[in-house]
Image (cartoon, rainbow, N blue to C red; front, side, top):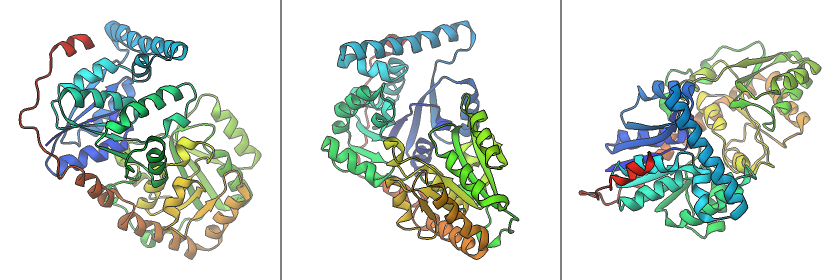
Amino acid sequence: MRICLIGATHVSQNPRLLREADSLSEVGHDVRVIAPSFNPSLSDQDARHLKRRKWRYRAVDYRAIGMRGKVHSFYTRATRRVAQDLFRITQLRGLCEPGYTPALRSLIAAAACERSDWFIGHSHPALPVAAAAAKRCSAKLGFDCEDLLAANDPETTDMVLEIEKRYLGRCDYVSAPSACLARELAKSYEISEPIVLHNVFPQSLAQSLKRPTARPAHRKLRLHWFGKTIGPGRGLEDAVEAVGILGDGVELTFRGNWATGFEDQLQMLARKHSVDLVVHPPVDHDDLIKSLEDFDVGLALERPEHGNYSFALTNKIGCYALAGLAVAATDTPGHREFFDSYAAGVLYQAGDVRALARGLHRWVSDRESLIEAQEAAWKLAREKFCWDVEGKRFLKLFESSTVTENPVEIDSQILVDAL
């Protein structure tokens, strides 16, 4: 079966798309991936990931490289910005998609030429692309709703809601990263409840790791947090202040890129609480799990007031558990789906740094309880919260699909229009 997955960002930044493409390819489907390419450094990461993949990839390139690239990049971004501004003024539905999805026409042209039996959009900007390609190819439509983006950015809320209203009912399936997010979508749009595919990872990424009972004890409790951006609104201040309360028996490490202006702010807070903050640059998706082996506890600090993130079971928890770290997390609807099965962890109310410190102190003073929490996470990540389990539910979606032996020809004019 021919299946085309469409991303809204670089493939190296979309682990959910990578997992699905890998799984479909491994069981014999002819998999193609379409995604935009707009950042040269992320393109290098894409290339490293693609060396390990069997499926086909096609980038819609609007990187500002060379004079032609700079002109094309400027035109692509400016066209989107103009459509956004006009949509806010006029609320014309026809401006919604070009205002929200960068390089919309080029992505549609690239996707439609793949002549697939299924088109699967990953995140909201990719959904109009997948829908247009599916219509032109008389194919089926899937959508992975990675986030509640309408709750994330007030400037784009109306566009996101319009896209959801227009396309969710057309999908042959919708997937979501948590049960609470799936229920929210079903209630809001009167669709069948989406399939839940948590943000978890395949066990193959942890093959080289020793289980917690076989690892050497550290002199201090080593805490770890990772994210694309080390910035405000992510709960990092909670971790710094809690470590300050606990004192010299704890180490705190963040992995990610600093948001502009935030480094001085957080380092000042760390000095105030006598915390030595260690910061590492990001690592590739496929290497992240292995990078966690030398730590004891993983932190998932999403804020409950951020509806976009609080409804999802963050991929941080999936990574920590698979790597055999104990988990400390904020009490959000998404996190509770993991903690319902993980009684050995620390779940605290966001902002209550003393509660976080109390929970962590147990692991500072009692190594046996730390190993117990690590082993519980290790086991849970192999029996329930891993892609090896959840990926089977995903693959079942395609078992009864009809393959189109003679897909419709795509009008070559769509390629001309996209240029």
